[in-house]
Image (cartoon, rainbow, N blue to C red; front, top):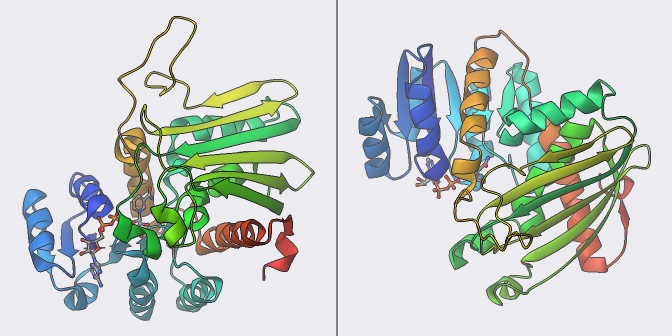
Amino acid sequence: MRIGLLGAGRIGSLHAGTLSADDRVEGLVVADVDPDRAAAVAARHGAEAADPDDLFERVDAVVIASSTDTHVPYLLRAAERRLPVFCEKPIALDLPTTRRAMEAADAAGIPVQVGFQRRFDAEHLTARSLIESGAAGDLYLVHSMTHDPEPPPREYIPRSGGFHKDTLVHDIDAVRYVTGREVVEVYADGAVLVDPVFAEFGDHDVAVVTLRLDGGVPAVLTASRRQPLGYDVRMTVYGSKDTLGIGYGPGLPVHRLVDDHVPDDAPPSFIERFAGAYRAEMAAFLDVAAGRRPTPCSIRDAYEVLRVAEACDRSYAEHRPVSLEEVT
Ligand SMILES: NC(=O)c1ccc[n+]([C@@H]2O[C@H](COP(=O)([O-])OP(=O)(O)OC[C@H]3O[C@@H](n4cnc5c(N)ncnc54)[C@H](O)[C@@H]3O)[C@@H](O)[C@H]2O)c1
C-alpha cells in the first residue's frame, strides 16, 4: 500500500517513522507546504517528497498531520478520490465544518480514523475492558487530567481553538471511550494563573470541568498549561468493585512526600508518554485502509467530542451548567 503523509511537523515526522517501519507500506510520500521540511523528513525515512497538490493521485490512503486549518480541505480532496483517511485531531474547530467533512466522507464511503491516540494506550484499553466486562462494578466517579510541562508558544494560542478544544478534547474522548458513556451536561471553570498571555486571547490556562455522563455518573477533568515535574496524564475510575488508575507507573510527576522523593524520570511530553499508542493507532489505520477493520475512532466521535468542548466554552463564558441538548 502507498501512503501519503501531509504535514512533516512534530506529529507528522513521528508518523513518518512508524509508517516507514511497517512492512505493509510499500511506498511513503511526504508533503508539506514547506518543501524543505518534507524533503528532510522523507530523506530521514527513505520516503519520497512531493508537493501537496500532487500527492493524492500517487497514493492509496492519506495521513493528514498538517496544521488544523488544513484538515478539512485535505479530507475533502481525499473523499473526491475515495481514499481512506487518518486525520489528526481536531478535524476542525467548529461543528458545521466538522459536519461537512463527515457528510463528504459518508457520501464517498471512505473510512476516516481520527487521531485520539489514548484509545490505543494499553492502560486506557485495560480500564475500558474492566468496565465493559463488569469487573470494576458500577461506576461511581471518574477523574481524568492532562497537565502539560510548559505552555505552548504565544503564536500557537489564537489558532489553538482554546483550552477545551485544544487539550481537554483528549480527556473528553478518553472518558467517553473508557466508560462507554456519553456526556449529557458540563460545567467548566478555570483561571489564568500560568501566563497572562492566555487572557489576551480570551483563553485560560488552568481548568476544572465537571461532566455528567449518562446514567448520572459524574466525571471531573482537570488541566493546566504548566506542570513543573513533567507531562502528567492520569485517569482514576472509581467503581463499586475496583478503583482503576491510569498513569500511576514509573515517571509519575508528583513530589512524593512520604519519602520526600522528587522524580526526574517523568515523560517530557506527549510524544514519549504515548509513543506506543501512536505506533498502535498507525498500525490500526493500515488495517482500516486495507478494509480489514472498521475505524476505531470515527468523525462522529470527533463531532461528539467537539460538541462537549463547545458546551464547555459556553459554560465557562456564561458561568453556568450547559446541557448537551443546547449544542446542536
Ligand atoms: N494526537 C495528538 O496527540 C496530537 C499531538 C500534536 C499535534 N496534533 C495535531 O496534529 C496537527 C499538527 O500538529 P504539530 O504539532 O505537528 O504542528 P507542527 O506545526 O509541528 O506541524 C504542522 C506542519 O504542517 C505543515 N503545513 C501547514 N500548512 C500546510 C499545508 N497547507 N499543507 C501541508 N502542510 C502544511 C507545516 O509546515 C508544518 O510542517 C494539529 O492538527 C495538531 O492538533 C495531535
